[in-house]
Image (cartoon, rainbow, N blue to C red; front, top):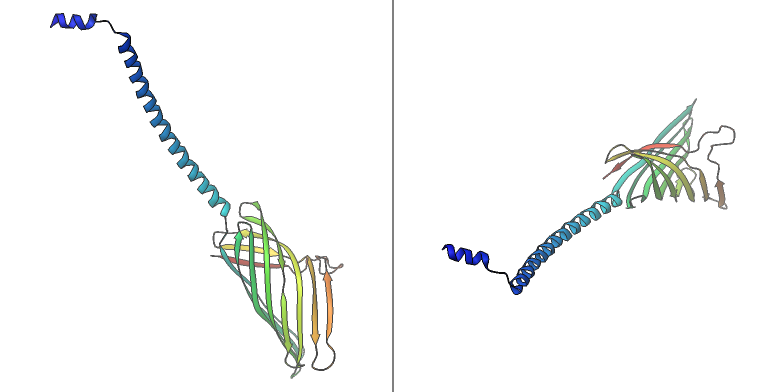
Amino acid sequence: MKEKRNYLLSKKISNNDLCQFLSDFMLINLSYNFKTKTKMKKLFLLAGFALMSLTANAQEGLKGAWWAAGQVSFSSDKAGDDKSTSNMILPIVGTFISPSVTVGAGVGVISGKTEVGSVTTSETSTFVVKPLVRKYWNIKGGLFFYGQAALPVTFGKDKVADSKTSSFSLELAPGFDYFVNKWLTVETSFTIFNVGTSTFTPDSGDKTTSFDFNANPMNSIGDRQLGSLQVGVKFLF
């Protein structure tokens, strides 16, 4: 046994054996490196896909979200026996077609009535259609500035005078929108530009068409107050 051990220890390693050993070692090492690199590539690919998914979701923002808002008003004036009332109901629904652009439309009715003593001198009813588009810019956090363009169209009738009215206009209104949470925002806006035409058709006689243009954001030069200032809420769903 001792002689055999000595024989093995004293046996010289041939060149072929050395070459074979180095070849086997390199093959095992290359195989290990290849498997390791393959696993790392898979991890990098998975991480890349995850990052792209998160980035896409962040860029989508409110795209595809729907919202509902509206305008509701009521007024009543009385002086002695004379009385006039007016009210408006205009629900508006829209959707975000991109993370910062939304389109919508409002459909509603405006009605009014004027009484002089016991006699009704005017009773009007006006149908309103108001398509609009908005572009948002983020200021900070949930506060956004937006620019809005709207094309309100109206068709009205006075039951007492049996006259008809119609109008078409373009309105530009900047505003601010604060996102309170994921389903509620508070917004304010004011009209700075308005241009359009209106037509009045009496029961008898010629109709009258007028053209209006207003690029003054104030109600008048004298009072220096913002024109058509509106404040409301918007619901997201």
